[in-house]
Image (tube, rainbow, N blue to C red; front, side, top):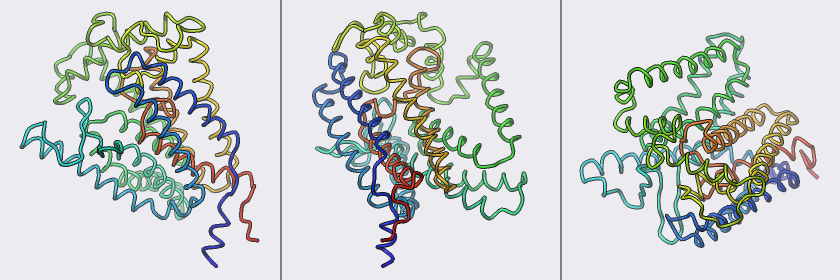
Length: 408
């Protein structure tokens, strides 16, 4: 009887507007990858095209499964998922930093894959790849939502000590995977996780002074960075570690791409060339005016700009804005605090990726390798986003009281 009651509590109807946004994003992604055929060199463009269709189809199925199981069921397994993903991240760490160090960088543990220097994937022949860091982003947001709700329901006074205790609880879950992801190395995913958790904490009821302190520390770090970049490059390279020179060259390529258009500034320069020459309507599909790097993933927005011009890029920005506003709308309607914190984290994750990806392609932000959610090619990222949206769908149905707590 209990199982029956729990099951009927879960929403049975879809949020149609949210579904329409996802469907249009899916179509946009597939068309963009088709348009990038002449630019893709890493793999067969046709294979990538059909893989993206397959991943989108599978992702919609997974979202439906999440809706059927219900949020309470998913939350009951989140800690198991966390430790499973931590095991995967530790396996990747051992492969890169222990096995490769003793046996050479061409040797890895079974199933491990390294792409562009980052050991972040498991590759299964005939099936595809699996990137644990993409999924642990969602699990950390779920855990943090529960931690904040539990902390706020049990605290007696709003105090600095209470806020510090909350920070410690969140960091206890977040730091271990962040360290392992950073060592892959995948700085982009670390930034996404940090930003989404920071947004959740800012909305958790902590004292405002912490927010000012946080922005102050970020501002101070940026001032120190640019001071060292201008006056002491050698120290900055040493602070960045073994690949410090590579990271510094990426900053140089962002600040002055025309200084070396064949090397450090090539990615940004070609993206700006492709988009800047496209005008209002673009050059059409499958054009090859310049070599856009990572056309199907990091630079998919540049492909859309080249093919469809200003109209195409505005469509993508409009879709992202619709999705973000819809998430905010659901967050304001729901009454359950855990759901509010969860959606806040998903909102922060998506907005950060959208701003960073589009910003780096038009030259406003440095290139970090962060993809554009729901548009860029990628199986693990799509599945993780749709799991996240499946939970949002359940929250939306409850918030609108379409089938909430119906027992008959």
